[in-house]
Image (cartoon, rainbow, N blue to C red; front, side):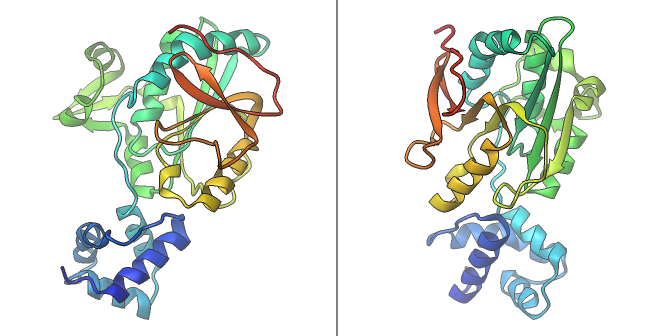
Length: 281
């Protein structure tokens, strides 16, 4: 490994400043492995040269590529399936009653990576909502590269093999060479945008459901509080927030209550009127 302690400290500070991601001691090999391709793409011989160039002449586009490279984009179709099962069995029946006047839902996939989560949500809503209902899904990620990939909706055979049922592949995808592409109807149902959850959020209409899964684990406690507070401002009073299996609002932000949702758990703002979503299971 050629990454010096000073180089590592610079990268840690950059990623924390730009994305609020905390890289602790022991991540030196991860940093070098992920930044070496970036260094070579910009014509440099190694990570040390990349850091030296950024220190001499900060380039926002190169800094963005560094942040992108160090953002974890692990995902799969219907990852941790219980939230999707809860959505079909417990949550949507309650929301259909609560939104009967408008027959419309707004959903936010707030760390969408390469798009499997928002497209999975779209497939779920397509199959579960009654006729005459409409929905809008906003999908965001800090990585510009991931947002572009997700917007294209094109996946390798290996990627569709990770959790996508065969019947959904047949119904919602089309073959494009060696890849599979989400059909145009489903792509139009998801609006993708680059968004940094740790920065002030742009104005958006309120949401009925927010999936903020497997991202809080990368933040320190103060950033977690800030993100949960800002996300809460964009939720309807009875909206539900789904976090990752290893994440919770408990001990972080006491303005949320944890509520059962099928076999999963979700979170609702404490000031809201209670709506039962225990459902099946």
